[in-house]
Image 1: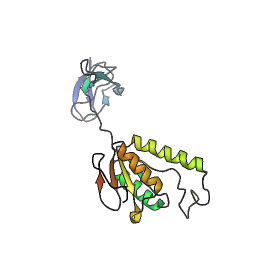
Image 2: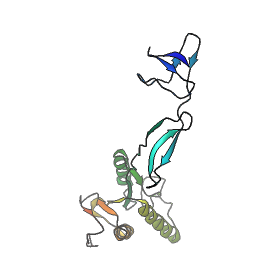
Image 3: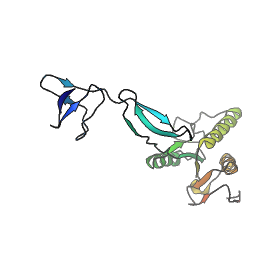
Image 4: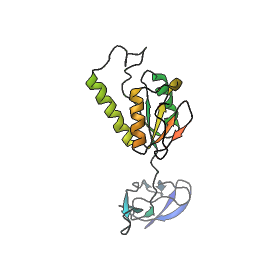
Length: 192
């Protein structure tokens, strides 16, 4: 074992284990009169509790150091629903929900939008419209909550179908223009 001096000036004995850091400053660089050592970073693996099957600790595969498993909570997933004629409302809601730390699922084709090449005069067949409506319901399946963009109180036939689907599947529902929220346990009148 050799004695090395950390870049911060703290002197300690460094073993041959490649992934050590200075306990004073956290640096992984050390120097001695003849050498400059740059340890390899830890390579963590998760060790699971044998009784619960949940992650318990993480252990470095190289040096054996352990640390408590840190679980990062998954962000909420929100699905935007509404008429595709309100592209600006979709863009604003997407921005606001993303900045609030949520994963946003939205429409991928603004069929009724005007003033942009994405939807204007492109159109779709009836089969494509049905397929897009079903695709959006799969997005609702993935979501924790649904945000209905009812600009001017408007809820069209497709949006009403998505709203009914979300409530039937226990999704939390919010509305842009009423400020109301609904849960699957609350019955609502479908004639908003």
